[in-house]
Length: 354
Image (cartoon, rainbow, N blue to C red; front, top):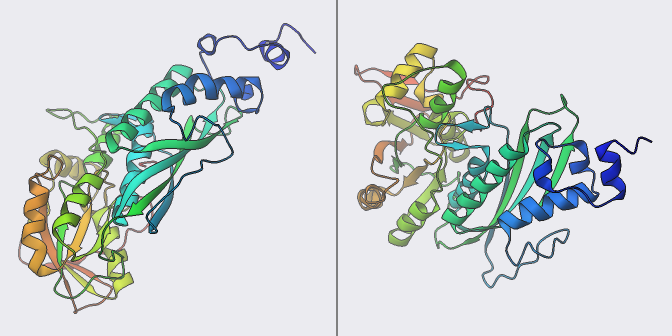
């Protein structure tokens, strides 16, 4: 044993201050003193709340409402920092939004980190702080979690898995199987922004103005439309695979057809230009901070107006309807008056996007 080795010293004595570690080392994931220090000085200090402070194997919560929603997701985005956000706020917002798509009010999150040895401690602190800020904006608590460190070369910087619990606050039943012929399809805003913001970093694309990811929590918008309508049949956030894949999943789950209007779909000029350059279709580009709502036709007008009155929904649009024709298939009326089938994404168009 070499007592001059800093990791050996940390195994037997009080660890040096966390600030003295510019990078994550394997001992930070060993379950020993450095792990305890990382939890106490970074995670607990940043996320601190009464449910987390016991540092138990799990968080114990009391709920008066019987209806619960539960979700989990892993985030492997590359690069971990991108215009408009990073893997940390993406992980929080993504899980909050998954709960919102179930018609639930997000309450509590867990966060599990897989960190590659050598990852910058300052970058980790920045990510953790952005998670805290995102959780505060969404009104949720991060109440439990886990940390593992893998050998250098065995991971890819950092992966984050977040799980969430929310209370079901809406009387209507929201499910991918509930789309009905005649329902209207509403999109809460511009598509393709998140995916192209990340691709712009990877490919070195330059725009007249910086294109930033629109990652954001949408549960407040969902709550707003839930208060004015009990006729919201389906909610879905079109993340991986974009709007096209999300609508194909709904069409197959509900065994209905989907009819889209190309000119009604809000696509920013920068996204269109980048997609043309990269050979991509905006309908398949990943989104964050956006959702699809399939609603009864009689309520579509007031739901659309409600979304447009929200700061995140100014560009909301009615983009099509559900039909009894061609069940399981999405068809789009094009700008030139023809029509084409919009199939499920085949393969991976944009790797490591969320």
